[in-house]
Image 1 (cartoon, one colour):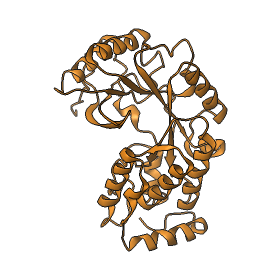
Image 2: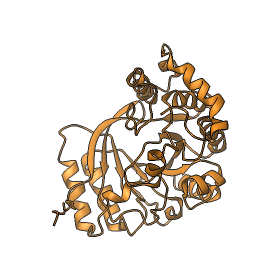
Image 3: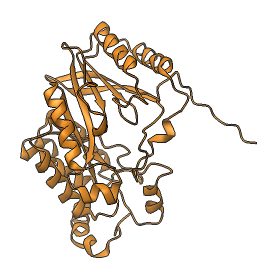
Length: 320
């Protein structure tokens, strides 16, 4: 009988430090907490449930946070907490633990907290945080198009639910970060680009920041099956550059961290230019200056343009 590896429910899934925009750039401690997991767990591309553990209780969450805060001997201005679900879902994050987070932040000198939540959990009675902290809540809208969100992603809520959640956050003086997803399944490369630009225009009056997520292929997902059957390819990095430029020109702050860039399961071009294009995307996310993309050159941009022209007719990826 094979050995079963037990997850350590007193340690976070992952943690790291990075830079984030906040009155310039600030040191940010990012923690992925191990929780009971997202209750919805039906999105076609989501593999987060593999990080969840039904045994996790509030004391385990506290131990995870304490461990993360003790790991780095440096000053942080921002704390970013991901839960692979919703920070305001009581099944994942009890109210007492949220209070524990706020208390530790104040004691440790943090000034801003970034979390995520599905819109159905964003209620006035839950969005209560100390007045001397800044709260930013990310919502995985993915697209402003209800048809794409329902039938290409299976997200389980409508654009109007997002609008209602934003209204609550604004009333409570919390910031709004909106996640948009570049290239969910069943869209051609051109359709995916246009959906992101249209979505950015639709949310311009609602969001403070756009986070452009570039699709990658998590194991054990429906999306992985499509990819293995050669019915899906992650987005080109050239597509991300085009979308970021367009969204910035709309006047929105937009960031992107291309996970698994250059790998077959992640956003990629031809392999030769992946590293330089991904680095430009990261630099742009900190500077918000589209000139970061000036000077990017590779012959594969001509192939990408042909893909945009022809994939609407093939309905399957023309290049792996």
